[in-house]
Length: 417
Image 1: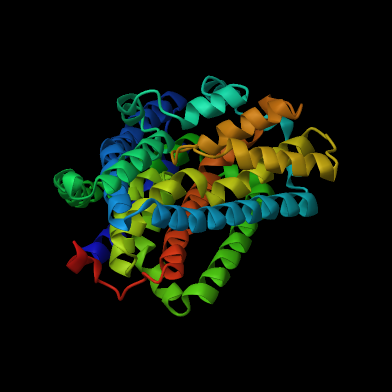
Image 2: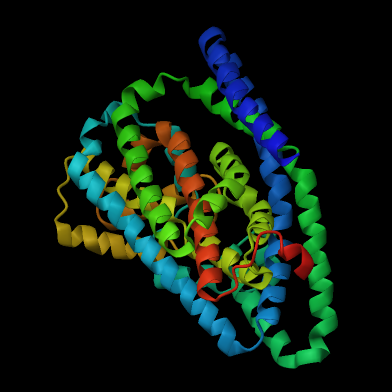
């Protein structure tokens, strides 16, 4: 069924692009607008179905994972290894974007007249200037119920860590709660199978809407900018896969094969949240210990978005180039470090990284309205950076499992369950 689903998703991608192109070329502007708005609902339904199970899944799996890891010392050791990977991968991703944008100067090819000002206004309503207070408020939950209602993954992770450590320290007394949450996690993973059957419809609706609205002609103008960005993604994939091969050996190829389905869904829907439950299941099938998957993967969704990190430096500096603003290397490194901090905890949803780019431009005196210049092509860039985020988190979880000596033979997670 899994292979059939992959085929259905690929067919949906092709049909979505073809349908969108036909509508764009043959329909009146009013019809195109109505079609895009309505067909996009298919993608919205799929994303919302997945988002309903993200919060309870993160909470239940993370608490169970920490409780099964045992004492605080083990949690600290595994968490420390994870953060070492996250920080290293984030810095490399940011540097790749910075080096490529300085070498190829993609911003110099952007035409200032192609700005999507309507899209910019939508983004402006979602962002605010960065401050330490706002960062702390974004990380530390005021209410776990509010965090779950708004799908603030990082806040849920913080609460779940406290809950899991407390449960582990209570020992046998907390076992009924842990067993109940373990059952909840299994039920939610079962729901995942039902929801994923709707993925082809979501993929079709998302791509048909954007192609009908923008047309394939958008690539002709932004070909150079988009091409250099895809080159950056290819470089990042090569680096990640090389490190993965050095640590995991030949199992790296198997990892790529087993996460192909989540990668495809993330790529086509531009939402890494959409595949969080399925990725959890596939990594356990790959042989990663259940408790480590439950602990590392939610952390990765907040701290390890490699594709988004690369795009942040790439897009921010490209906008500066478009306006002819020269940024000394010292200022660029400062921007890199600021992005390293401000990006933590961004949601794995479409265009979240653009909100960070918008805030960063304002901070470094780059015209924030410049974000409107890259909005027309952003959906296609988002496809690649979202897929890269999924690869990075799958790799991080597998590598930490290997470092802990807990990377089991494939399929053994079923016995553990």
